[in-house]
Length: 89
Image 1 (tube, rainbow, N blue to C red):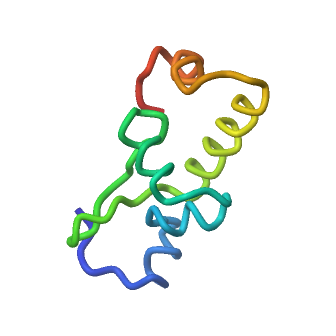
Image 2: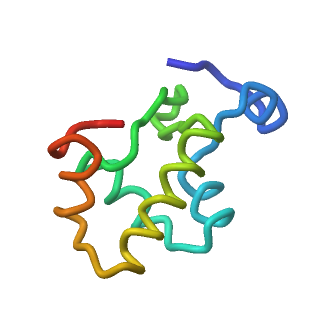
Image 3: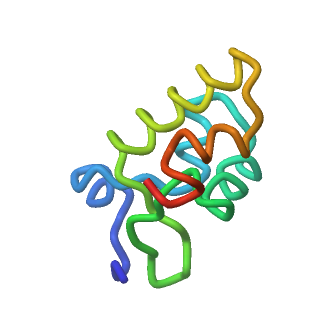
């Protein structure tokens, strides 16, 4: 668990909170949470306040791939299968 990192420190470590990911990719925070809950996104760590943290490069690449596959008409379950049978990234 990461303790009391400032936004600057988190960004220096390339860690993003759910809202930051959502804003960067243009989706709702609830979608980012849901994708993490079902295993499409890997939560790298948590803040002391229990906020999820994601590695910036990994989560943005994964979100781009999810969007690409959704645009091709795949369901989230099909995308999970493509990512290794429903496992974490």
